[in-house]
Length: 206
Ligand SMILES: [Zn+2]
Image 1: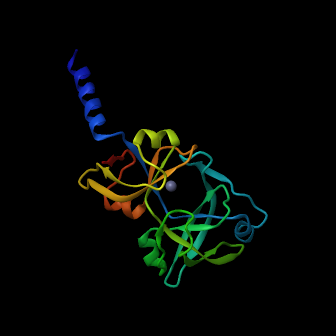
Image 2: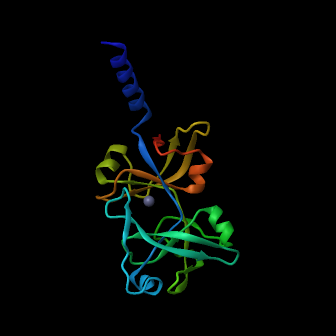
């Protein structure tokens, strides 16, 4: 065996000991729309795809909106497709401060305590209590969940190895669905705070 082969084996053994790596995806502020709100903000239009996201069927749309809160506004906020049953606005805590809103940190879809926010386009506007800060989470398939020995809704710790800012995130929620692709989602505040790069991976800490 040559040096290179030995090095590869050692790397694999270390990775095995550390646990399987999980790609990290950074969620920028974005909006999901229901059909009813789509028809107000973009009448007689359909969402047009700009870019596919890693999760199957999900995409960044060409459409953008302006968010307005009591203290400020943020322009060019991307709509993500496809349309959903309920509209939802996901911002970072920094965005929330700029807008002057106090959204709860909750999982996507949990809008019970969501903050009021106004969405504006050149065609119309809506004001609804749909603004949240997304709680960090990991998407995984049923097979992934078995391999990691976790269940949907579990809270885990995830170590991120980054240059100068290696960190363990607590309170990371496991989200399991048959069609989910393995990916940890954090927002821009969390990513910037710990110097996440495009190739950063996470590992569940036992
Ligand atoms: Zn996600």
